[in-house]
Amino acid sequence: MKRRDFFKLSIHYKITIIFGIISAVTLIGIYLYLNKSLTEHTYKRIRTNLLKQTFLARSILSGALNHCPQPGEMDNIADRLGKDLDIRVTIVGMEGEVLGDSELDLTQIRSVENHLHRPEIQGALNGEFGESKRFSTTIRKDMLYIAAAFRNDNQRGIVRLSIPLLEIDLLSGYLKKLLLISLLIAFIFSVIITFIASVFISKPIKEMAQAAGDIADGDFSRKVSVSTHDEVGDLARAFNHMAEQISARIEEVTANRSRLEAVLLSMSEGVMVVDAKCGILLMNKPLKDFLLIRDDPAGKKPLEVIRNIDIQEIAENVLNLKKGVESREISLLFPEERILLVHATPVLREDRVEGAVLVFHDITELRRLEKVRQDFVANVSHELRTPVTIIKGYAETLLEGALDDKEHAREFLQVIHSDSDRLARLIDDLLDLSRIESGKLNLTFRPCAIKGIVERVVSELKKQADERSVTIKIDIPDNISNMLADEAGIGQVLLNLLDNAIKYNKEKGFVTVSAGENDEYIRLEIIDTGVGIPERDLKRIFERFYRVDKARSRELGGTGLGLSIVKHIIQEHSGEVAVESLMGQGSTFSFTIPKA
Ligand SMILES: Nc1ncnc2c1ncn2[C@@H]1O[C@H](COP(=O)(O)OP(=O)(O)OP(=O)(O)O)[C@@H](O)[C@H]1O
Ligand SMILES: [Mg+2]
Image (cartoon, rainbow, N blue to C red):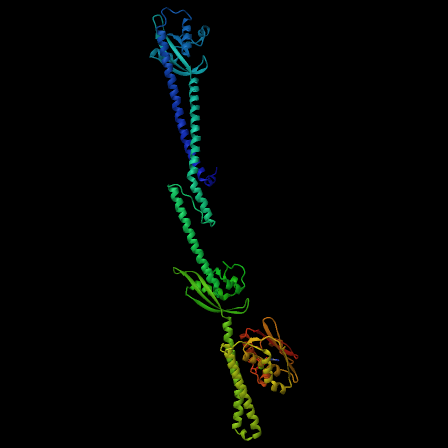
């Protein structure tokens, strides 16, 4: 097994393997020690036995013969002794000649060589006994020999007992086998017990590992069951506590995050947050919608997402200079022409810049209104100056003597009169417009009959129409529903539209006022057969002071405010106004008013 594989193993396998190795080493040690002492012990016991048997044989031989032995008698004694002691017995004479051997017959004995110089014989001759371990050439085996001298009344000699060492080997081999089997059984048992114990010990650890995995996957309800009171139990309890804490923290963070998201979403301003390296961390939905960004911009640089060098520059300035808020007005060309006011603030933590927050205000409308106001002032001044200059000029001419020229004086006074009328009308219109725009027009919505209002206005304009030989036709059904409107307001709308329809009509032209209705609205149309309005001007004629043909309109006493007053009044009624026109053929102005 490779080292890496071992570390991959489950903990109870590791414990089992380590313990198995330890017990194997210990048991091998025990085996080696016992093996050695067992061999020694067996040998010692066999030797002691042999020695005792030798002494026994000596005692027997010492009292055995009461006569001088016959040839062959000693061999018989040796045979008997050998049989009784179940061992090889050799009897040797004092000169080393073999007299008897339990395993040889007489003829064989005669051919056996002299034993005098055998170490055990020498030992027996010189001491109490002699012993020797060696290979027997007679019976071709490793043998242990012990010999002792005996003496009786008729004979002296040496009795020698021998045992094959093979028997010692056999005996100790058997014991060794026994030892080996019991040690092996002990080894197997210890490994099994270790395995079972380690499974029990590692179970809570395994459970914790699984729980940790589940928690990492987001399941914080996961708990480890604790049953022990040891270190593993403490660890499991600490683990459960940690899981609860993490769960609480995550809930807190999630709540904070969703609060922040709600704030960012509900803001109408665009918000962008960048990190210290100027990578985008967050961009709120209003900003993404505004810039038509569909992909997730996280991680990209502002310049990659919004093709505007100014924004990148502002962000970098704030990140690099730490100098607090930076505000700049920038103009975007994409997706549409827009003017944005960008406020950038660094995010500081312990005096380190960690990022920046950029807030985008769309001030396009503000700037447009400013421009409208400037234009308005310029227009009003211009409009006022013209009649004032004329009045002043004619009055001066009169004062300088033209007063006496009765014929011209009247003409001049006529001009002064008409221009002061124009001035008065202009001022009235301006006042109306400003009242409407500031919401001070106090319209009161009541059910009223459209036909009556149209008839009244038409009769008011009768003289003007006759002057230009324009015929006005009213085409309104008698049973048309009432509308919910301010009578004076609608009167003014009709007056302005009909005034235009007559003013910009041809000589002997026609004007038709017709009406229709659907479920919600009454719809009025003022159709003329006049000069028409060029296509490109149609969009703008409801703007203040906008006139298609300035000279002609002025000549006709127009100020260019009539249609913008119309538009405002209709809007106050939650209605809509529209225009269609064909050059040279005529125009159709229409508006809707809710039904009563
Ligand atoms: N029925 C129409 N036919 C052709 N042109 C029209 C018609 N009505 C309006 N216009 C054009 O629209 C311009 C704006 O009309 P508006 O009523 O606002 O101003 P005005 O008639 O010039 O002045 P005022 O109505 O204040 O006396 C006019 O100058 C004219 O050029
Ligand atoms: Mg008009």
